[in-house]
Length: 282
Image (cartoon, rainbow, N blue to C red; front, side):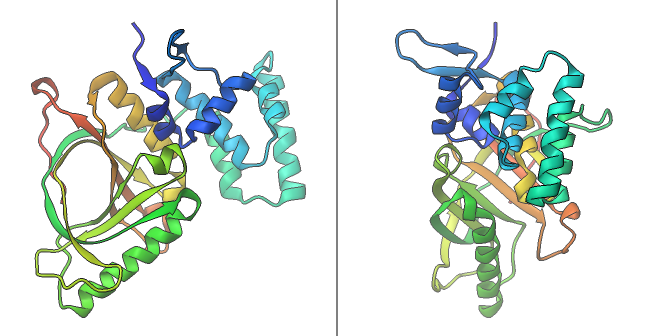
């Protein structure tokens, strides 16, 4: 029997808004695996995540929806690649898109490396006191907001003579994924007494049970790690409602080389005896 993701979970896994997924269903671009005939609720499968990621990358590169439909409906691999190649040529000549975006698209079209480990673990995360900044932000501004908030947090700790007590992290409400606007909280663990200053407040980051994967690279390219993690949770764990959590092990403060950045992504789960594995963060 198929294991389904709700439209909200599929939205989180693919970084597509619920509104976008409904629109793609209406035009036949990405139809859900099942629709409840009484409630109209849409359900998706983990196997649809790669298709959604390809569609999202094409849209990021400005491909019209009708051209995406033509690519997905291509009768053979050669025709598909010809249509993709034609669009990439137009992008390179007319739009001047970055080489990173083109490489990311081609990477999605090919199979994953044979030696790429999933690296997913189930982990208990202890509650931790921290300095934090929490605001409602838009998804398009989230990366720059994150870097600015981290800079302010570390500057505040330095000014008050406090040391960080672990890697910085973030807690992100579902609405930031499903509607591209929601509450984001970024924090730096610290054990000493913090005096609130400006946007910086004292916060106890709550304990959590998480399925965790490590993403290598900048936050803007984390969608594949999110998709892999969502597929794992769907098949092997009991997902629960709760915000997504991230921990920034290596980032802008450590190196300007984004290929060396490392981010742990945590999906909330309810652990059982069968899946128990030790691990802590915080």
